[in-house]
Length: 80
Image (cartoon, rainbow, N blue to C red; front, side, top):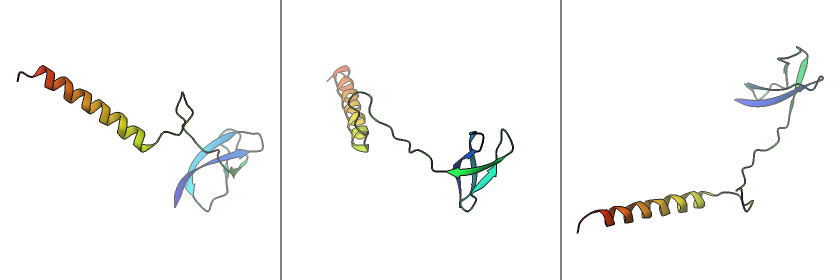
């Protein structure tokens, strides 16, 4: 299976490549030397104020509140 991996050469050039899982080295795009596959740092997204992890429930709750607000404003605008 092909995936994106990060590679680091001896000159500390960091690069990415979309390659097969079995590949462990590639040619560095900057200097041409061998670059070895490294373990990438994980990408984590934290909420800006509290530092909590955003969850699917938070997104649902926000969208639900926006929908309720929109429905209320429509009901006030329509003559009854």
